[in-house]
Image (tube, rainbow, N blue to C red):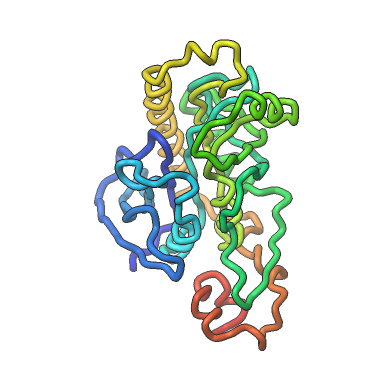
Length: 289
């Protein structure tokens, strides 16, 4: 299987990555089922990258239906060290306007019943998650945004809601009072699983609207939101291209490649062969065959 170091997950409005050359489509099977779609492998700014449409081509999968574990495990199988995630979000604060991009450094979980760990079924691990994104990768994305002329906000909290319906007005006002910055439906699970897989992860949160709290909310039309999505897609691709160029010239210096070093609590002798095989891509260096 071809190995790549940079993974890109495209969300609403970003279903493909322009500028890829030497394209190859690849189906990757994992112990957790099939990912959202086949991966598109290609060369971007001199580096091989793996692109995945989060919701599948044609936007077939709801947020609660996404095979999060399969998506991230497949990235690990491909050798990915950095995951750049692009995701459409609503703004919960006045300063984050439609078509702005936020690079959050925190998450708040309001989902229900989603599986967001590779562990269980005979093996226990507790990762540290106080700082849920890779600050080094976030810094690269912020610098890429500034050099691309896109309005970037570094930092902030992404509230991950269940969906698929958007917030009620009462919920939106409550989230604002909590100090949340943007709201989306997908990135929290990706971030947790990427940390367990020892892969660096950061989000480009692409603002499309002000959620329902804003007094002008009713004036926002579907056509306008689609227009913002299209603009965000163009801006995100500019940032990703520049970020890939920078990442292709650097090595990982953060500690996320050893996130599991002290996280696995299960006695090595008590871990079944089935569990070792199932999680071999992420725990193999710690528990052996």
